[in-house]
Image (cartoon, rainbow, N blue to C red):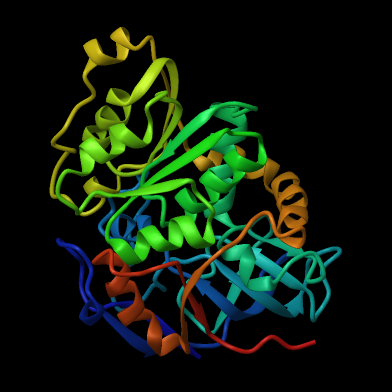
Length: 337
């Protein structure tokens, strides 16, 4: 079968040319586990950092051997797992860039294909959606009347976070994104009240004008510096969710900016760190709730889609440049009844 791996160990931001396809043996089914045919492959920003061994202490894949990490939705072709039959659909965080994956016990979740589109399970119902739900409902505890500011609002996490905030009763949701196309996605598809283009001149003044009442919650995905910008347009006792530091994912060293403790104290702010791994045990709970929102038309999602495993390197390079619009997804093989 085909697998994509690294040509060599990385020391810089990944580009399409860093990846190569190799032939590897079809996998054996592990005891208590399954073998799946990969249908959908998720491409996520944090993988760029993980490929260099700079994400949560995880070991990078071995060049010319290991598959590039990636979440998948797949169909079971062989099972030694109780309650899992051939033809069932599963989600796995460690499926990888390959045509088939062997998944040991505890490394997959069975999916109900009638609950929502299968491809949603690596985006709005996948780790990005779970991250958004955890930050908005479990940490910030958004409720009726909140005013919510979301950075990286065109991304799969940010776009979902803003929509869940609105579902939970937020009075206003404002996003920050880069470029007119991404801002249109934020307002027209995700339904935010406004989106501020941080690439436009005078954007910080525009952000202040969009939030005359001050944000009561902000959801930060980019940097400590942007968190301080959010804090500057927030009211006292703001709840700030620190979800990610995308600006630092590809940097050579520590993030160059630090939180301003004086500003945090002055705003009496709660700064809430979010690691989605803490919420994996509640994934099914989230999917049950969010599937209903999708069916009711309350929760939208957008994709930057490509067909075929061979499309993964180019689309991943696009993601690393921040040029994607919507959640990057690869269709590796077709859904089958």
